[in-house]
Length: 281
Image 1: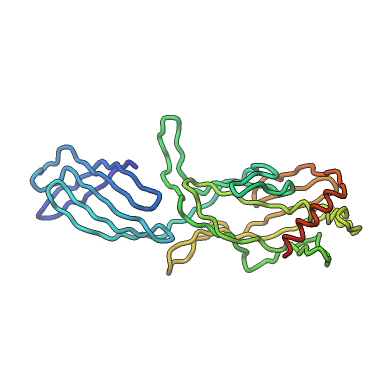
Image 2 (image 1 turned 60 degrees about the vertical axis):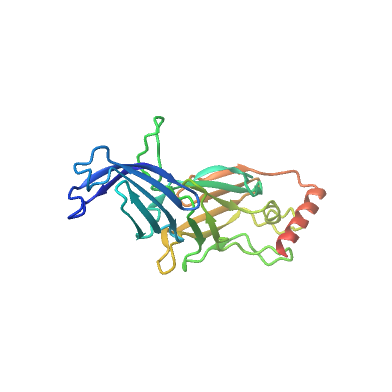
């Protein structure tokens, strides 16, 4: 970490407003150690030439901190700090990473599309390591939920004995961001559901072309007593099933589409039926 620290001065002690060069490190557990230096203070007897700050940033919103400071004149003390919970102002246009994309948790269905977004503002650096916006979201928790209205819709669904339910709302859940600004979102369905609605999974009820649309709200958690920050109040996620293709759209993303029409064998049917039974339990 590098930057500057502006001291307004202290009447009767150091009567000068000074700007110190600062460097140090912020660890992933929230602890930090900073060194502030001023090479030639105008009053070296009362104005410090070096100050050390050590502390811990904490809270769900990373918006609180405790700190200890000391300087070369043997002054020291403790402080507590807080600020308004910061949230993203927006996110970048979703980019398709692929169908059947392998996440850290394992592979995803071939009939599911993985999109990636950047939270804004975020850190951007050029080849000379000069950064323009210094804001990272690592360690913060984001939440997916469904807005109160309007409801989603599923034109594929019909009552069945396979445990397949209508898809009219987002899955929901929490993601703690790794150091960085990106997160991934999955839109689609399982291979079993796609073949089922095509009438190829021990069913003759052909529903394609069909699809679902759900509404998504994205927010970032703040500390207790503060309102969570919403940067996507309502956007539509769409998934379509055709006779030989599947498609997905995440809010303002371009339409992602792929051909997916495997040879349907009894072995594939049995495998997907067992998979669907496990998911329905």
